[in-house]
Length: 371
Image (cartoon, rainbow, N blue to C red):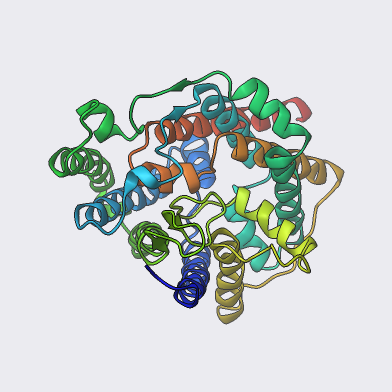
């Protein structure tokens, strides 16, 4: 059993590694323009699937890498926040739709807002702030009552965890062979899609897709292996150090932004600590800022007019509520959750994309109406 000193050292390692990986993620996204909302907008507006192929490559790498960690016994997918037996269908659908619509109004998802904030966008800073405030209200405040007592009541308690291999295997649980087979099938389908247009596989597409996917895998390793203590010296229970949920976590950016604001506001409270989510969110801003400054792309940017301000405020609020309700954003559910093959993550991702398409159609309608 590790001592308190060992746990403190491991906690510091988790936080430091999360910050470095967040920094790498921020630099990668800024360098390659990796963006889920942007990829949907490219398809709807121009029929261009290039950035969606970048996202698909990231998902394939994340799935294969995470499955590899599980096969080696380094992480347990059933311990993640996305694979619990509690299957809240309405939360996945409703939260995902609101998040997708909101990210269009706000010009990008929560992770993109953090990246733009680091690159000098003051309106992205406002978006991050509103996402955090509304997210925290949805976690612990007035909107939490609506979320828990209304939305999350529409769901079921499954007999097993909700990852696809376990659901396919049944009550006996998924063995390594089934998990590898399912992961390979999904990853191969994604890679076939990616390779259909090899001319679109530019350096940035490969770098962004493979890089972002690899970061997701690395954060799972940090959280699920380095930060895993089988018997905590204080509680004598299984523990995942420095995670807000107490379970294994990877990158996600709505709840972590909310927890970051909470930490900053109550910094003098000794019970508040820097978690994996807080460290990674701060790392994303730092990484994007570093890349923007080094490449001469750092630019201060503000709102254009009142309508632009209103759209960003409304979009940020929808992302804050939707992201917490759906248990994740385009990165949280869309990549981290998908990488552990959680059924709810696939449903949430589909809802987010549907919401984004609706948001893009709405914006086109508004433009046509004005014109």
